[in-house]
Amino acid sequence: MKTSLRFKITKFFSSRMKPIIPFDPIDFQIRRLKQLFWIAEFTLTISIISSFSTVPFPETIAKFSTAIFLLLVYYFIYLRKVILARGLLLLVLTMGFSIFIWIDSGIRDTGLIAFSGILICAAALGANRLFAIILAYTIAFIMAMGYANITGLYIHNIRKLDYTIILDTILIYSTIGAIIWFLIHDLNESLVKATAEAAKANRSTLLVEHMVNHDLLTGLPNKILARDRFEQGYLHTKANQGKIALIVLDLDNFQTINDSLGHSIGDELILRVAHRLSGIMRETDTIARLGADEFLIIVDSKNDLDIVFEVAIDIMNQMTIPFRLKSIDYVTTCSLGIAISPDDDIEFDSLLKKANLALDRAKATTKNRFVFYDTKMNVDTQEQLNLLLHLRTAILENQFYLCYQPKINLSDNSLIGAEALIRWKHPQKGIISPLSFIPITETFGLIIDIGDWVLKEACKQCKAWHDLGYKNLTVAVNVSAIQFKRGNIEEIVLNALRDSGLPPQYLEIEMTESILIDDSNVLLDALLRLRNLGIKFSIDDFGTGYSNLGYIKKFQVEILKIDQSFIKKMSENIQDEAIVKAIIQMASGMGLRTIAEGVEDEATKEKLKEFNCDFAQGYLWSQPVSTDEMIRYIQKFPV
Image (cartoon, rainbow, N blue to C red; front, side, top):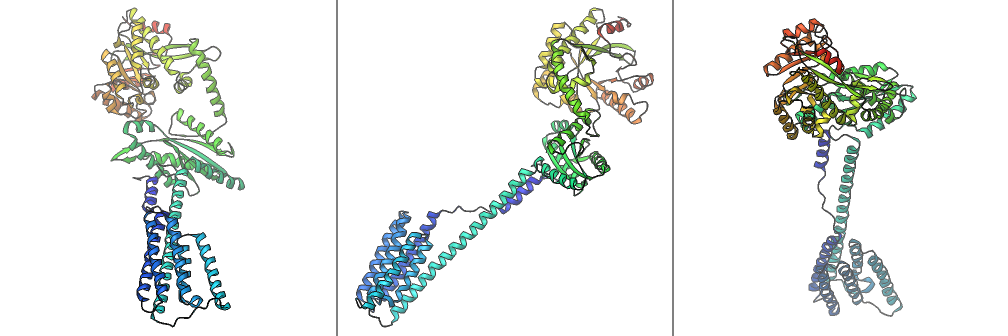
């Protein structure tokens, strides 16, 4: 799918929507008046020339006068005075032919048929009132001539048939024929234009309807059309006592790919995902794009939830197949949230909300899985809101404190420092895990104030270790992407170092890979200035996200922290062992050091030493401990 359906549809309609010249009634009537003027002048001129020898002199004079008066009509046409020119043309022709007929043979004169031409001319010019007036005048004129002849008031002489009469009759019929031809031509032209305008309006309506109901990038139904499809499907399943499922799909780490590789690659990936989903769905299913990397699949499961399971598994299997974009294979996974109607809800918006709650649950853990909605999720959501209110109080009342987990040099088992880890002691609920409250603080911006406090407290404590004589110990602090994006990370770090008196080289800032994707010069300059002061930077949870070695080199990162999900399973999973070994070898080749987190046994420690991993931390040495316990732990090592 190199082009979107939106582009194809727009191109299809545009290629068939030929430009239509706007209709100008003034120009049209001027053109038609000019044609009628020249036809009338031509007819009169021929008739005058042919009547010099056979027609009575008064009739010739009348024809000549009519032709002269018609010149005044052309003058008004030139001035674009359409109404005046139109009225004068019809008046001159009507009066002129009335005189010709009265002077000649009266009611038996062949010129009487000219009134038909004048009436047709009035109709062709759209002069409705003049048409009615001329029609009434013609009837009255005929009645007057007939009455005059019958009563003897005036008797018209019937002129002997000659070539002049024949010619006049031919001229009159030819004129009427020309006028009728123009009238029919106008009607056909108007019909063609009206048909073209109607077709254009119909095409525009179809295009607008498609754009309103479909996603512009992929051409898939959007939320509006998905709601309509769901409501229709629900009525059908209700009648058959069946079930209908909403599956919300979200690509894992899509934002990372989109930001690091560019929106064009991101859009192409979305198109490929849409195409692949369309290829595996049944005709009874509906696929819609809700926005960004989120899709909605409506599945008619009849009364068999196994169908929903099969569809979900099929989707996840298909998404793990690499997408080849610009000669490069991209691997992505997806998470699914599923809600069932009528079990979970019958309203589309409510059911979609519950499917999204299930999706959040799927992405909050290991991702790359699907989760069915259950009622407990609503309870969890309410608990999160309550937790947010307690967090604001916790900041004001200093309910947070730091624990420290020692970091060990694997080559000589010496202590090199510790990682600072935040904890929350709630007055009623006791110790609350960071996994519960850190995501909330990031969502609502509270992480900024909390992060500032953590940096200052950690630097202060590391300086206290130095004052005890352990001057080589470092402290590692996790810094959230939100803190970096706020734009004053440099100021925060420098303030923490200045207030504590800790030398910069003993502070290590742990970052997630997503921070490096913010490829802005402002962030890069700030990090490089801090790096030049001696502050160390490490990548936390390395291996779980989109690892771009170019960014690692660009931002001059020194340490890669291997995620504990690989470390803990090294002894039982050969693939995890291979991943850990590959990361260590790659880091060594780039001149970087590695630290393994989550080390819990001697076997894992020895394997890491064999792979030449530099540092480690985990329960094998110590779990995170309080400030006082950390001091007692430090004192076990020589100064």
